[in-house]
Length: 449
Ligand SMILES: Cc1ncc(COP(=O)(O)O)c(C=O)c1O
Image 1 (cartoon, protein in one colour):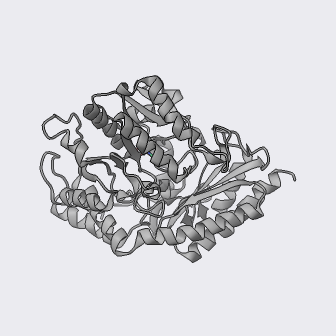
Image 2 (cartoon, rainbow, N blue to C red):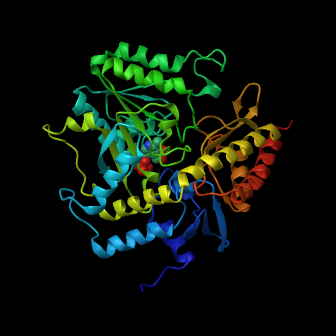
């Protein structure tokens, strides 16, 4: 066995030699995490040097859908490592073939062939290359409140504030407004909504000239910008518009896929199938990096005789594919997607309780185990408790309280995301909400009402 670094040395090396994503380096104080199991992980914080258990209500980065250290997935990786760690992407490989076949079985009707990538961002980049080559058109329509990854093409697709600081990016992206019902950009409420957000897409396509638009790419359910669950008719309208103008519909299911939304894929909740779907995260719960662009037979046919200008050294890495095969089989055999739907009902009732009890909760939304609490200063004006794209002492106090109680939650701006591993049970959900209830009392007190 190799010698292991202790927690303090790990922390010190991290501070000195590691550059962390999305952060001001001097302001970071990372937990040291070397152990996890199921819905829990163990972290050592500094300067105290104390280790404790955390309930992972964030699934790390909303990717550990199956929970930590699932024995069948770990065994599959070990078995594959003993057999073959790597084969060039031009060869056929057992686990890649098996995975591609499994994906054609579990994904929405019509999707059949997969091109494998390393993660979500490059899945999206390859999806737009494929859409451009297939349609021989160039423009891609995305939404403003969206995130599609941090590499240059993917950040160009992204609408949220992570894009402007790195502009100029790839040209050819046109954005539309979001189906954000709580803050409808068209000023509508449930009763008055005429699907203006979907209709705007057609208007924009006409202004841009439909002959120039290759694809519409949306997160089926928006993730890190606030869990937006559009009305079912929204996607029916989007599908109709795409078909009318010969435009491909690309569903980014990197965060929403693999049981997060209570179904295998979030788009199933809306009764439509995309032409291309991108996945990563939950495909193998991050045990080994992997993403995929899954396309319809019609799109795949386009490359039967035409050259596919896409390639990655690690396209279909055997270790990653072995982990994904084991993960998908476990989702199926252990009825884990069904658990997400069942526990989704429990989550939505806790969220509703929080809204009833806490004045600071302006809105509480969820679909399956994809939930968010949106905190406001005032329920009437819906003013966010901290401004858009900002943090503040209230949210810091809320997050500190949760960590003190041993609950790890993903929070951003005025959003508290509730996105646990989809294997969570009722007692673990109760444990989480006891802490969330206490944290919201802090938010309520800040309102001074
Ligand atoms: C919807 C969505 N698309 C794409 C990505 C990018 O995935 P990755 O970080 O694996 O590149 C993310 C990451 O959070 C995401 O949430």
